[in-house]
Length: 233
Image (cartoon, rainbow, N blue to C red; front, side, top):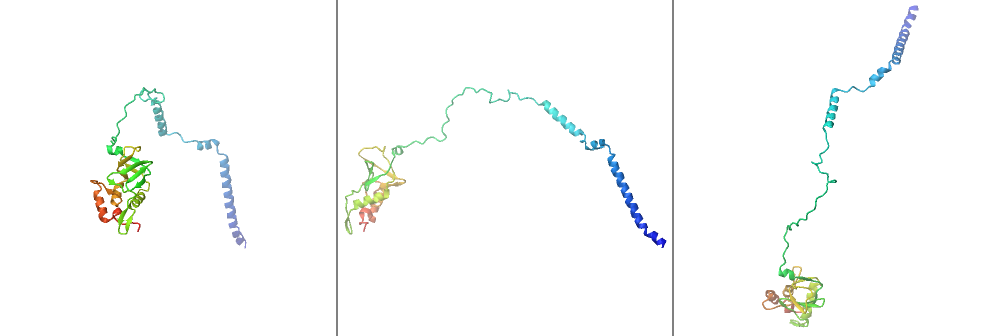
């Protein structure tokens, strides 16, 4: 029985011994930390010593600084201190494109605004009269004979001419817009010759030898305008 009791005490005894040994070791470690000199801490925290490469780099920078020099003012000008010399006027260069020379026909063209048709081939501009060249204007009082009888072809021709113009500006070959009496001229509305329009549609006759003679013949053959019947019926 005594032997059994002694065996039961072996394990607790071993545990107690192990715990005491660990406690003693921990106490020795903390005691060693407290006795550590302060100089050792300063040695560990000090920056690393300068290497030979870094020292050489510093020496090279010092050499470049010593070799630099100020800019020579004779080689590089200073605009803010230099005095400008006397300015010399030079002739302008010739234009890259020579100016266009106007022909006599282009120089005589005049823009006329808000034309008023007083007859098929006759116009008025602010009291000045103009007759289209190359045609015989159709008088307003003219009457024509058609299949259905007589009809006022002069009045109808003027109305058709007014509807065609609609007071749009014309370019006419008159030397100026302040002519006297009645001017005879060729007038264009954009790219259209208005006298040619009248002859082509049979609202005016071409004069002898006119450039519109062929147009007048064709209008007569087709019975257009004054060569046909009353278009209102």
